[in-house]
Amino acid sequence: MSLKLNSLLIHGGTDGDETTGAVNVPVYQTSTYKQDGLGQTRGWEYSRTGNPTRDALEKLIADLEQGEYGLAFASGLAAINTVLSLFHEGDQLIVSDNIYGGTFRILDNVFKNFGITYKIVNTSNLDSVKEAIDEKVKAIYVESPANPLLTVTDIEAVAKIAKAEGKLLIVDNTFLTPYLQRPLALGADIVIHSGTKYLGGHSDTVSGLVAVKDKELADRLYYLQNAIGGVLAPWDSFLVIRGIKTLGVRMDRHVKNAERIAKWLVTNPAISRVYYPGLENDPGYEIQKKQADGPGAMISFELKEEYDYKSFFAQLKLITLAESLGGVESLACHPASMTHAAIPAEIRKQVGITDGLIRLSVGIEDADDLIEDLKQAIEASVKEVG
Ligand SMILES: *Cc1c(COP(=O)(O)O)cnc(C)c1O
Image (cartoon, rainbow, N blue to C red; front, side):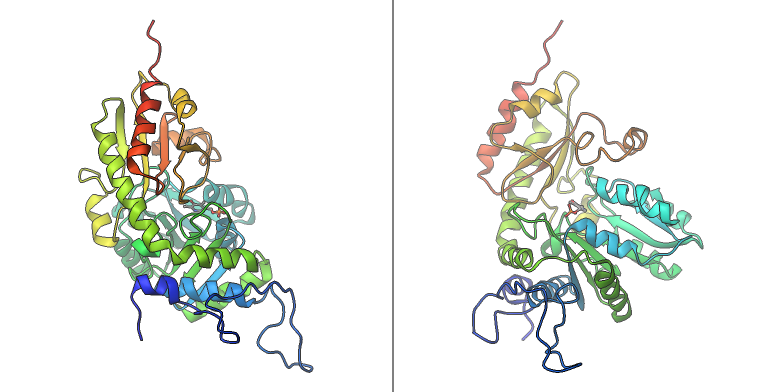
């Protein structure tokens, strides 16, 4: 029976435990497995190579992303590290111009040392993508909506360009999750997640996931996963599976709250700019609507000159000042000094990550309370005149 997404969240991948009938996949807290004779395994040898709890999560993310193969890692960056290890000295990647700071850092300070380079391109501009492609370029790496300015890239259009040129398209789908956007179905080759965010959903575990369709690509990634070893532990695999069961109901509320807050921010005279692809006048609105089932729940905004962003953060009472996103609780962060501090000030300025930029991860609390908190923090952050 082919299940719809809301059922797959609960029954996709491995549904419960065959042996005992337990409705949840047990936590197989083991590093190794008994072999019945030389060369006779029961399909499991060593937990870096394979573990039944991790395997259940890997099958689940493959199902949700409409892929064939899934892989789970100890963090989003361990997933990114493994995917980037597909490339060789001399290869280059085209990278969206506002991406997660840690992704930039691993490209700039780790892979560049191995001769794998990157060039930053505004991937929402298809001509720029076309122009940037040459022999050296082996892949295009996109976040959409991108972090932290929520810039939307037309995934299907970039996939067509990539395919025509024989390049891989890699999409970081952390901000929307497969509940709202399925990049493989839009033509991407590799989907990456920080499972730490919406998939886990409760700010209680760090994890990373990858999904692909192509068997050969999957085989290379499984090889690298085992060779590099940044795998997700059984207990954390269990937590992410548990988180995913409620992804649908959580995302519905996240988006509903975010849409209300974005609309409220737009009408607030203290705010100079709101970045949210769910707003009709947002430059990414039409493409977002075409390629995803919702705009997500990340909002960035800037306070006007007369307001002090530092005291805004200090005044927040309900919304927590913290890195990360995608948990049930609302978080506020200051990209310039937190998530995107690894990006040199020069590049930050170029792409529009100003010092006054505030990023919100809208949680699933009562939206009235969230608006009340934002309102009082804004009012209390007016600069003293004179
Ligand atoms: C958090 C994040 C990552 C990195 O994931 P970790 O789990 O923190 O290693 C990558 N991409 C995006 C968009 C993220 O938000």
